[in-house]
Image (tube, rainbow, N blue to C red; front, side):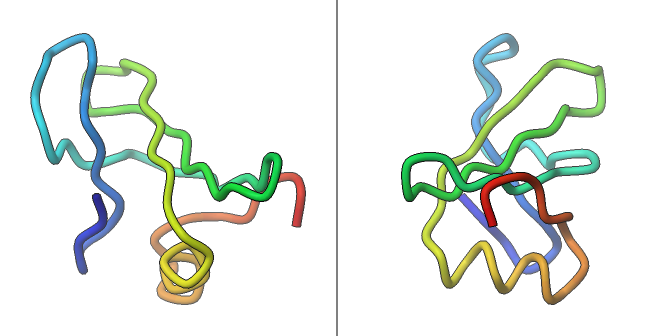
Length: 69
C-alpha cells in the first residue's frame, strides 16, 4: 500500500489501485494505524498500515499525526 513517494491506496469510487493520497493524516484507532485522505479528484480514501510503516511516513513528512497517538 505504501511506496517511497507517499501513501497510496485503493480508490473504491474509481476502482483503481495505488492511487496517491493528498494530505494524508494517520490516526490510531483500536490499535490500528489508519491513513485517511483524498485522491486528486477529492474522493475520500483510507489505508490501513502497520506501526513501522506509519512512523516512517510521518518521519519522512509524507503524512501528519492525527488522533490516538
